[in-house]
Image 1 (cartoon, helix red, strand yellow):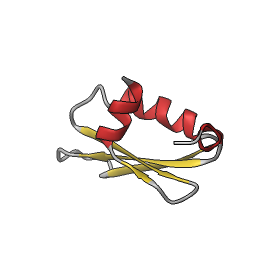
Image 2 (tube, one colour):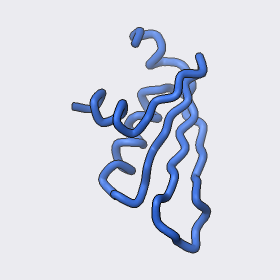
Image 3 (cartoon, rainbow, N blue to C red):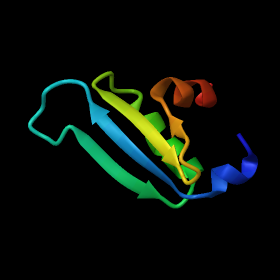
Image 4 (cartoon, rainbow, N blue to C red):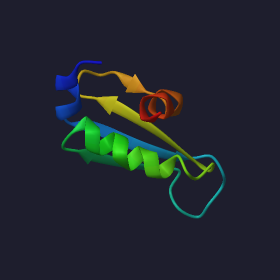
Length: 71
């Protein structure tokens, strides 16, 4: 991934994997991909949440991609 891509907007959606009274997905727009990845990192600590990111270029970043990037 290009370093420039980290400075472009991205959408983060956190899907819930267990039934809860809250909505199944929580979408949010971030000013940069870095911010979206940082927010996704927090969601990865909860096994009931699965963060997915869509970049400005249309790339879909899975929870596994996010984990690998953070490590």
